[in-house]
Length: 296
Image (cartoon, rainbow, N blue to C red; front, side, top):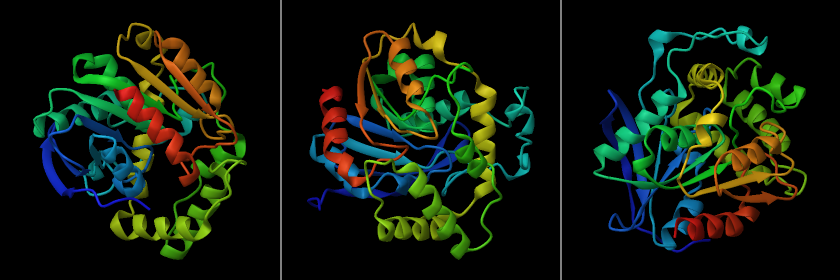
């Protein structure tokens, strides 16, 4: 467990022309640490315990719902994009790109009066964090990219069975959502970390009850496909960078993390044995320490 940490939220702000929902842990006088969520991931996907542990290390920890997820603005009028062309190596029409989601993050910082922050993203959040660093380097004190990738097309793709799960029809009830979430969790956790099913079930229920909106995940996925590779742009970064990746990631294979660390000058790399595409509690001490020490 963790010691109580001052908690602020949830709150809503206008940012980049939309509404974003955020909350925060710790002392607002401390250096800000912005957590950017992954595909379809609500802000509660960042465990309270992780946020509190980071706040205990002396940071003001801010997490938020990306556009099209949680309690932030939904792009209903855009409908559900056709992802098939992208899967066949073609072009895709996306209602927005990762650079728009990066502008959302900067807009949130503007709304909170933050000149620059330590920026940490996981999975798609890592892609957004990289994009923030590329387009707004003066706003990023340090960059941490977890289980993410440069998006280069020559990198290994998700395992076929994982790709099929990603494109499967959305759940139509809470029970079906719980079943699918547990299936995902078993696949993504990694062979080195047994899944806590009771905890995974609680998380599934919490996300469903807070905001179940699978069509938004489809539009976020379109944004990933349409945004292309960041590899060349990352070569010019001067932002201190930490890359963390599981060696057994079935969704974003470890080569994505290796490529990110190779592209960014002087990036530090932390590979975790037996870890998939998740941050189970057993990894928190190592990951929190690495992030907190990097941000120093």
